Every structure is written in structure tokens, then in C-alpha cells.
Image (cartoon, rainbow, N blue to C red; front, side):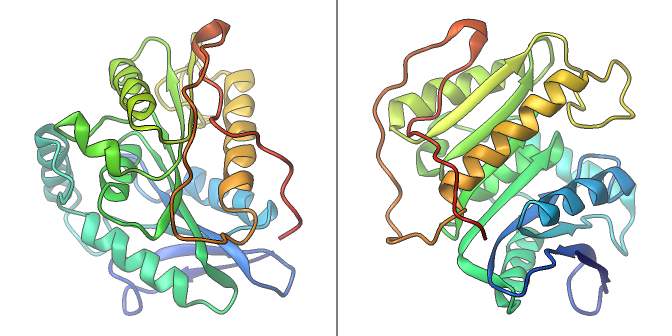
Length: 257
């Protein structure tokens, strides 16, 4: 694995890049931090993606800026539910940067985001067809909810008792109505920062299960070259016990990337 910091001269805000050790083209993932910024926990998520065969770029939406002002703008955009809120242009530029790397297959790119980053991922994917799959964790939805009819496939993870839980359930309903492939699951004993091992009340079982689902889902939708730019159709899922809705398509183990 190779890692390096991305300078703000090359990318707005800068970032952190992790690449697999193998010399071939890989799927790419944009990693979007929560309110704590591009910290060591987000960098570890980025390295985990590289270890799994993805070129991962963690953005820094606070880089070179006043954090308080950025958060005020981010929260205003999230409360309005805008799909073109402040910060999304930076994400689009980050994806363009990622797609130009020789190690990345530009037809196989997605994003994962945490809390406000997950909200960014959903809103962003409503207007950017380059994204082939997203993984929001503890995220809110754009407004109106019908905006998500334009989404790519979604693998979402939400605590069972959290201020984002109702958003996850509303997203699940709309994705079902729209025929978009998804796997959304609610975790009864998980904290808001579901994958953050330093979070109060961290639940290792929930975190491991959430990560495994992301790997399976991304493996299906990003792990092999897409034959067409059309998004896959799906049948209405059957609810499973525990609040989990199955992915719309079987998730065979992807070929090595």
C-alpha cells in the first residue's frame, strides 16, 4: 500500500490518498469526513479501502478555511436539503482528480460519507452520474425526498435510535419506490459515529457488520468493469427481521481488482 497527502495546490482543501500495492487499475472511492474533519480515524478508513483493492481519496472540506464558517454553511445546506449545497463542488472536483489518476478505472467510482459527510454523499449523488455506488453512514436526506430518485445504488448504515434514523427509513421507502438497488440496515446498539472506534458506546459487532456490507455492495457495483452506464433495475425487496432490507441484486464475490 502507498499513501500520501494531497496538497491544496493540487486539490481544493487537500486530502489523503491511499493506493493498493498492485500495479493495475482499481475502482476508486471518495471518503467524506464527519464534523471532526480529516482526522486519523478517517485516514484509517481510507487505508482500509486501499487494503481491499480500492484507490481511496479522503477529502478535507475544512482545509485552508475557517472551520466554524464552513460548518455553518454545511449545516445551512443540510437543513435546506439542497442537492447543490456548499461543499459539493469540492467533492466533484475531488472525484475529477481521482478519476485522472492512472491507477483508477474512471468507470468504477463511488463514495462513502459519515454523518454530515453521508448527507453530502446522498445529495451529491443526486446530481452526479459518475458515482456508481454510495455508502452513507448516519446521514440525512435532501429535500424533497423525491430527489433521491436519481441516486445510484446505496448501501446505508444507521443507528436504530438516532436523529438520522427516520431519514434512513424514508430513504429506504423512496429507493424501493424508485427501483434503485440498496441495502439499508439499522443497528439497535450502535452510536451515531458507527464506524468510529473512539466513539462513546462503540459497538464492534455493528461496525464490523456495516463494513462487511459496504465491501460486499461495493464489490458488486464497483468491483468489476461496468458494461453500460445505465443504472441497474431491481425488484422490490422483501423485508428481513431486524430492520434490514436485502440488496436488490445478489452480491457475488467480485474478481480481484
